[in-house]
Amino acid sequence: MPQIQAAHVVVFYLFDIAETIDLQSIPELIGSRAIAARLAPKPATPAYVQYEKPPLSFDGDLVDVGEIEGFKTRFRLYDYGVLSLALSRPFSGSWADLVSLGQTHIENVDLEQRAEHVCRTMVDRLRPALHDARQRFLSEDYLVYVVNELERPLSADAVVAERGEDIAAMLRGERQPLSEQEKTAVLNHRLSYLADDLVIATWNAALVYDTSAGTKAALEILEFANSQLLEFRYYDDLLDVQLASIYARLQRPRWYETWIGSRYTRAARQVHSLFIDVNELTDHTENALKFVGDIYAARLFFLVADRLGLDTWKANVQEKLKTLDDIYRFAVEQTSMSRGQFLELIVVVILVLELALVFMGVMK
Image (cartoon, rainbow, N blue to C red; front, side, top):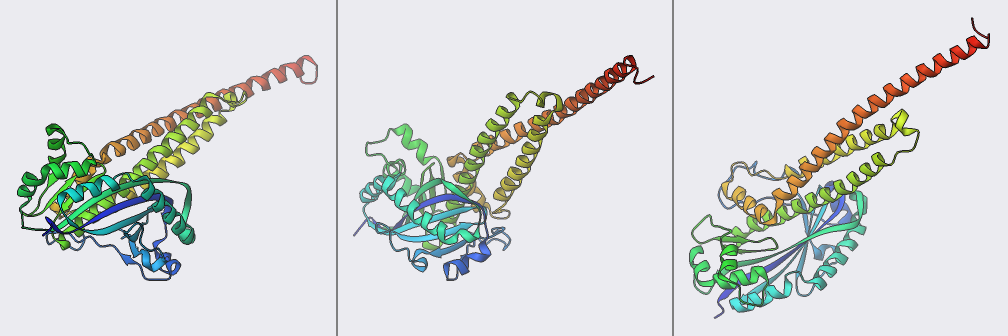
């Protein structure tokens, strides 16, 4: 009898495909009904612990996308412009087999390329619903091992005690034995709600040990957290590019711009518009899913967010937004000063002209 009787492997490939997606028009474009995602938390929680705008999901079979290397396909669209492709396949066997499978699929370049090709095909089909579609896709991938049933039932602590070395190896994707220090570092980042469930998360993979129903919430949160990471990476890149453009404009003015302050006026407009847009988008992304009243979901999200470095990316974006705000204030002040200097110059020119006309006898 296999050590792991019922399990499956899920690989998420997420792509930033647009600024926003009109989810209401998706069913018409795919020619089928899409399902609104609903968080199914482990403990009983109030109905308001859900998405602000639920993402839409549909199986690949509905859009003529079959299996990819033995994985079933499922698409999910978030209204803030993210397309997620989930690849899943069942598994049963030994822990050694699962470790080997993980080594094959963690950061698998060929599988990632096939996933991106499928997503680009889907983007072409969904283009009417995309606002400001991307030409270049920023992407994230994440591997999840879902174990539902073992040869003999074990508590979460027993699973870690007996199979900690295998779990650490498959989450790291390493073929060589890990040090005790690294093994401990991996296994310390875990969460259990009941005695017999377990989630261990790293930056690119996770193990979920739970019932079939219990794994749904964990997978939902893992996918959502990666979609947030993808968006904050995009905002960080966008702000880097825009700040470099603004700095270049301010440092290389045309000769006449120094007097009339037009470079500062344009910079102020650009900065103010960018500041508002990014602030609005980041607020929308952060508020997409609320965990008020659900301790397990909140703790799991914060565990995953910590392993993904989500707070660091958020802090980077906030710091650059603060820089934008400082540049905006500076540009406004410089614009006022330049306009004041220009008006003073006009007054001097008028006085010189009047004096010249007096000396020429034109004026008395």
